[in-house]
Amino acid sequence: MDDFSSSGFSNGDLDEPIPIDDDLDKPIPLGGDPPGQGSVSRSPLSLGGGSQPQPKPQPQPRKIQVPTPAAKKPAENVTSADRITGVRTFFTKLHPGALNFLDEQINDWLKNNPGIQVKRTDLTTGEVQAKKTEPNIIITVWY
Image (cartoon, rainbow, N blue to C red):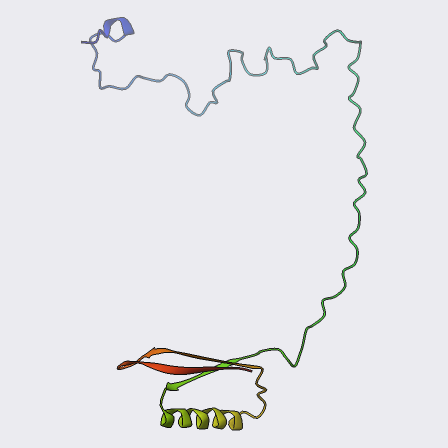
């Protein structure tokens, strides 16, 4: 077990707090010197180089010449009548009645949208999945 006899506690209750004689509102001094009588000197330290320490010369700010960028030309707006602004895709099965219906669909769409100028068309065949997977003709109109 621990020997408490050497620590200054003799036959006392170990759960009892140690009495404090000092005032708790009084600041604790830093170091061993009393306040106001410190042994630390705040004067500059002389290293024997001269009678007075010479102030360090302040470096002069260097002037850096930054090249100014050349004025950029404003970007020109590219507007062209050939510019593609939209796309519409039509598709139908590969039999004569469906192809006639596709022609009517494309013609009606062009009549209902007179401001559209067709720029390009693509045509391909492929399988479109519906109730049954069947070959279809797919027409893409770029305008």
